Length: 187
Ligand SMILES: [Cu+2]
Image (cartoon, rainbow, N blue to C red; front, side, top):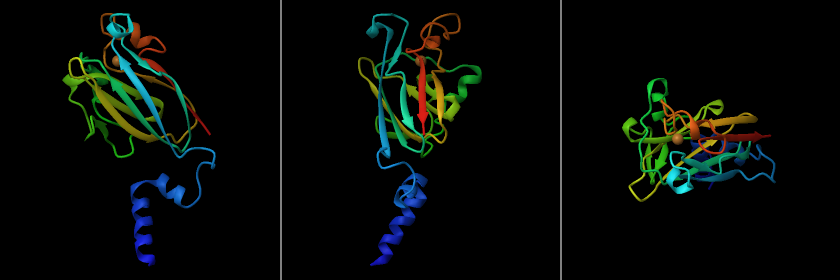
């Protein structure tokens, strides 16, 4: 009778330290949901009425330290913005629970550079989701989960040159609420 439960607990431990904490009755207070989903939409400049200015909404949100946060971005952008130079590392998924993200339900560890449209990168939390180009006239759904292990306000950026200016890093890229925003982690 005990054996299956023990196995189950061991499996939880192996899978997720957070789940193990919850099982042991520790972690966040009862009022704090253990798991939250942040839904974001990524639209093109054409769609938001400001050509050349792609935008992510909601661009800023708040979560709790220790919470499992699933970030889901639905992107309608069918144009690529291949990463350049020191930013090429952002083709790789980083800081997610299983070191992967789901692209239309398929688990991947990276997106081929030529196929990158944007990134959702919270450098201060070591978290990076590359966003591949959407099918023309369609969309792509990118999902990844992480646990913030420190409190603070962290700026996220897109590191694909999707903005304006000579290197694509101006305009939307450097304007809060477009291709940059804030992730706040409270205790
Ligand atoms: Cu971008």
